Length: 171
Image 1 (spheres, rainbow, N blue to C red):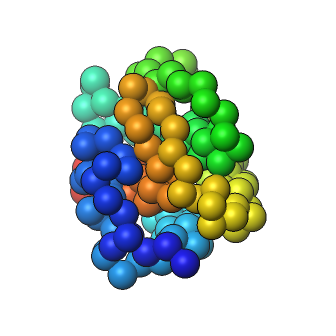
Image 2 (cartoon, rainbow, N blue to C red; image 1 turned 135 degrees about the horizontal axis):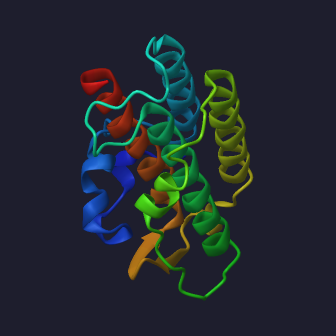
Image 3 (tube, helix red, strand yellow; image 1 turned 120 degrees about the vertical axis):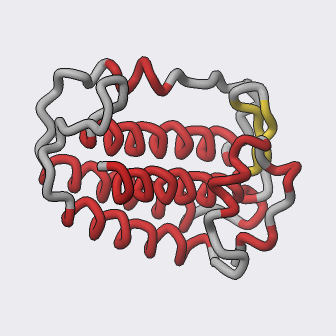
């Protein structure tokens, strides 16, 4: 079992610190992935504004924020898979604005986004549930920074926490 308290700062880039610190120290990785999914679905189900609503003209709309989180989880899960399999290739970063802005005129349906969130998370859970202890300790380089596989679920869930807080407070 891997707990958040087990992570060391050398296992992730400093800019993920806030995401990781949003997770309590005693949180176990697999329970986090499960619980975070349920909490996220609950927040999204309670959104009563149209998903094209934005709180500022230069801000993403609700649908873009949610799709951004789904895309980010997919990217981080791919990074985990690559590192777990021992692929030594350095992985590139991704431009979140390019990804989200490509969805600017997309009509977001709550049911479709809920399904995407759940499908992607179930896939992430499956990936980590089937990882060996050795594979969870592997590292790789993405966006120019070394990252341990075992830190990735905490970054994914902390990233969701960050955006769910923004949705609750600003949207």
